[in-house]
Length: 446
Image (cartoon, rainbow, N blue to C red):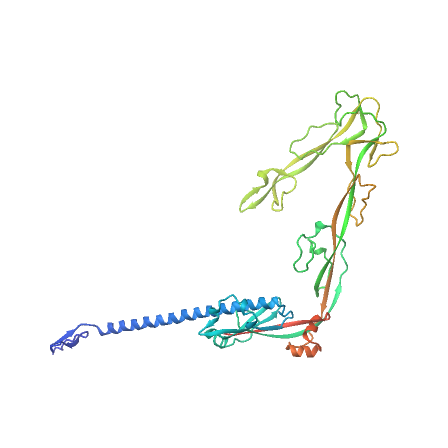
């Protein structure tokens, strides 16, 4: 027996005149289309509320930031910021509202004008800033921060609703000084002042005095003193005034008969060169080794001055060399040549003697520099021939402390630490024989 065929997708309808007809519309597709439509509406609603939440959060965060910054500047100007770790100050918005960098319209939300209290807690070298917004519509702190985090030792400066819990311990401390170092020349001292110690420290830290291993350095003291060194100008003086003398020359100039052996002096040193100088009986030649200095840039050698030879490395980055060569320089002995009688040179001096009263100006020379001393030896009687240099010498000593172990077994609150030591926290901090230790815990609104 044959079973009848059914069109599963067909639906029966009746026309206006009562005539039945069959529709091939799919009810599953219709339901799917309706579902997609409502899903789209739902997503749009979710996006709307998500964007609105972000927009509101950004607006509230900006209001908090502006009020916190204005309050901090106000507290700094009024010099009411705490200076002791763990201490805090709270200020109401009406004290500095005109300094907030926001128009009044931004400080009114849902017809509620924003009010606030700001709190600044000293935390090591900075301040923890916290705000409690009141009124202010959806930005009110009791609406934005309905829960609290657990306490943590990590401070997050991006958070605006923070409670700081400070506990204390203490130790005893005693101060000591090292002995002073020897004075050292300025070439051994840094040119930039230390930000930590506010003095100009030695370039080599090993120049500073030794301290015990458990020492806590409080200060490095620098004492300066002016040091001096000098050298004297000298000339050849002679007894007889004979103007018939030549200029200085290593070889006999034309027109002069005799060489004055006592007038001898050395010429200036020539520059170093790869050329070997001509040898002369009056010439002294010096030799040394020169190098082609380079540094590496990747695998490439970068030579100084295209591979020119120099004796010393031209700068710190040229640390290598690959070839060597001899370089030379020289100086010549020179004399004055004369006709007639000899002048009878008496030797080098800074001032004329009883018999040698004539000075040969072309023989100017200098003594070696003296050692550096804290006393000046320049005075009116020698100022005509003495040259003086000055330098600022420094010496150092270190102030340090030795600390005991923590006195208390556990950290305690402010009230208990004051009771234990027997003085308020401000007096404890200023006591040179007591040191406080701090432990901070932070609880954030979320």
